[in-house]
Length: 123
Length: 135
Image (cartoon, rainbow over all chains, first blue to last red; front, side):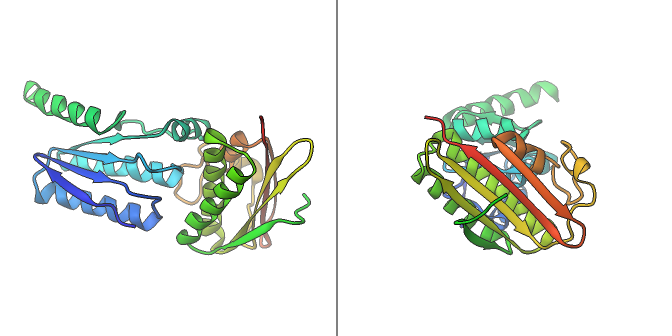
């Protein structure tokens, strides 16, 4: 099942609806990287709340999405990792190093807003 | 490594991975595994099934329950792929020949209570794992 991507102001919001196959993840990656350019987005939120499993493939691809969109000028925040999923990921040795995470959609939006506010400070 | 009474699903492509882990989770929850434990079991199935798709093209994932004074779930991944040349290295964190993170097998061993692997080059690989239900 493909992941719907909504445009919300300067940000893109991808809400995972159900278990993702590998193809769904790769499609999500390609679409986000393309839409960041089309909509000139500066931030991406991927909501993974319904995901009951994050295996090494899913983790690797989320990391790739975050790094690829950053190269295109947009920050990605992963939100909604469930407690059991976080536990299994740590036990398995999976990390989302270099990728911003937030508790939920609301926190993710706040994080992106504060990131875009500080962008000017660096420039 | 007895595997009588196990239910098996074929694993040939990535869609089978999702099916295998969903059926495994349902079985685990039916047996009484909750929350973190059923997530761990689904994650283990996902990693083992992915190994089959990535390295052996086809194989099967089998699961069964042990009921008795202690309940446990058995998960077996079997393929007739190329086998693993160097098992010791394959069990090392960070080692991968398939472009993955190299955490699959050592990670699965950490997540389960018991773990056995048999592999012969040219013949295939069998991974046998067991997790005990803790009340």
